[in-house]
Image 1 (cartoon, rainbow, N blue to C red):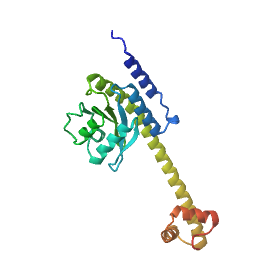
Image 2 (cartoon, rainbow, N blue to C red):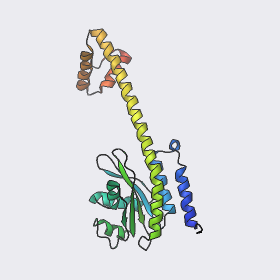
Image 3 (cartoon, rainbow, N blue to C red):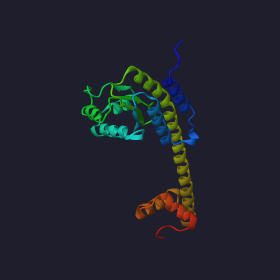
Image 4 (cartoon, rainbow, N blue to C red):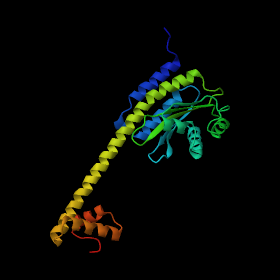
Length: 240
């Protein structure tokens, strides 16, 4: 039976910490920062780590980084619109650069990475959620190319890390949708109240009352909801 090494013990502590993350105590940004910080602590190779998120419009953003180098190398890839982090995030496939000094893909990124002290790169895709995709990026800073141990531990860590990141994204997305729904319902309610006032005051139909609110909205460059709220609160309309 193989005895766990100190590195194995440290990795397991990190996995346990990832499993204890509470949605109530964290934002998506703080979860992402915790993931990148833990990766930097437990992965071999003194890595700099980051998380890339690509929004529905195809725009990549580094939402968390454990070291300025990771953010800088992310930006190099964004600027040239190619690189391992973008490929992993968009294809859903793990991408490895075992030795930046000899890598020929995505030029000139590998050469830039090598010049800045990054010897290898691993990018792990996050599970795609709705219209957003992303990846966990690991930039090795040892004097040697990525070895099998580093790749194995990095893969294990990424498999654990994607769970809280993915779940937290879903949680915040659900909260956001609920808030948008609540706002929409509140807006509809106040607009219906304003329409009722106009219908009674001026003997208008429902469509005519809404048209009157919409016309005032365009003339005053004010949201229909705000005009409706003023009418409900004060009994007056802008310009009346």
